[in-house]
Amino acid sequence: MDPISLEDLALLELLLRIDQRADPVEGDTDIVSRLVDSGLVEQLDGEAVLTVAGIELCKSLQHRAAADEQAKRILRQRGSSGGVSNGGDGHGAEVRGRRRSKPSAEPVPGS
Image (cartoon, rainbow, N blue to C red):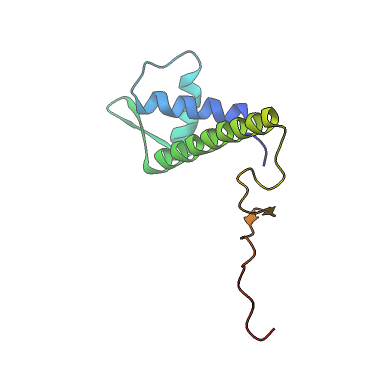
């Protein structure tokens, strides 16, 4: 998965400023009008306000940015520890995004 793009980070920053009712910065007016056209923002009494879709997009971008940061931390930790081939906790191996459980010590019935 590719890291979050700079455009998405800029969009997240703008959505957060709108949500916090911060003063607009240079260039916001054109972008806000495009967000209004796309249904992410609405103008109420001359003030930009996030719609439900805008709030959901904001949450999604926040989660994506947080996941990227967590991935960076994990990669740094793995790099500083020399890397561990079994996922780092000794409880199983990573296989295509899924963790295999430890083999059972009990015999399989019928064998």
